[in-house]
Image 1 (cartoon, rainbow over the protein chains, first blue to last red):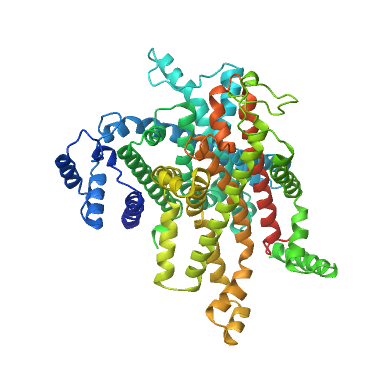
Image 2: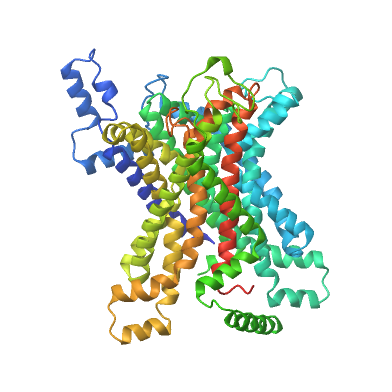
Length: 319
Length: 313
């Protein structure tokens, strides 16, 4: 397992480099100076402007600018927000926790839906349960997250008055009341993301289990007289999960997209809504840093998926 | 294995039955298989109706999309305004019909772009071996692991002004959105096409063409590419839905089309602050997006059944 982990880590480095090149290219191709807001300010005298340009290295050759920029990005030196007058890394670190909590909780919900439903459907293919589950899954991933969010608000906040629809950072009280306040306001965002992911994963789980359940070793396990439950759980599911792990990792970028939308609908103070605010206010350093953080998160989750893959399928890690 | 024997027997009788029927071209056969998928057929009917409505609708429903009428502000659906009005008293039906044209055009154009890039990359990777293939696949994997929505937002933020000046407001944003969505959706197509090429280029009929002296471009365009189109068509169908969702997402975040171009996503964005007093304003565009995406996904599912020759129906 050791060399496998090392190999995976070494593969993650070029993809981080590749993503940073894409990001930097986009930035460099963009019309005008991203920092022109500062440099065009009439209150800034010409010599200061030149000094600033030299300091930011705007006149250096492009590859030098790239290394300069990449070095700063990797060291967490993300500059200074134009709008909030705070260091960007502080701004992001303060908000990253909420985003990760919402994404994490919604992934757990999605797995709790997709695994049992997918496995049960595949165990009885074309049964009534399977047909209903498949239709619901189809509807679930055809409903865009922004519309589900609005529908949930309309139903649970406006008609039923059960749940609050604006996320509050500071909940009064302590102990159980505090916890309940946080859970209550997280239910809808987590459900929006979780239902969407759960619906698309259900199909993956179902087809993966269907592929495995027909194999000969499963018949062998049955003919040994093992109870159906342990055949399914111990023999089928573990092998069926291998391709599912890859697919889950591949959909991570999509999950972050959904998280941005959800944070914007429910006004959750995470990095997704930070990104939208920054774009609406032309706050370039924040935009670049948030995009970079999202890229790093995608690579991190891919890495985790690779490691899980190696653990589920020992053949991979000994190759 | 018992299972496979039985499947091949049914496959033979089904094939023979199909051959006895009049149309035996692969497309007629695919159409026959498609008709077996009831949800897909129903979806095709619904989607065709929606497209017709959006194309013909504005010719029949003559109300303008930006006639402001403060007396009919936030009105519920009625005979004069079948889908109600928004906060400026603009007719939502007219805006829905107009927005539907844009949303569907964006979906189609982005799909064509994604297919074009995907087929090109996949075909080059699939026909060449060695470092070209490895490099292109590395690029594909890299694009697959990019965080798409943040990057979409970044590109639109950086390039919006210039394109607006170059092509005008509506066309500029349209081109930008189509280009960007197309750029982020070609990867699955490229992988599919490459995989198809890998298996097809070793087949006997391609070898026969090679033996007859067909050049590589001819082998690709006449023999390999037409046979690898099935999965591409399925992926393209699904891509239309994905592109419509992407465009609506951008507009919903307030960063796609401006508010005088009422796409379905933009209508939702404008309506979300009035959810408590005018829920109809959000329901109509939301349902329209949902129905379009759902029907396209079902059609894609039906096409997958129809175009996958391994599947016995």
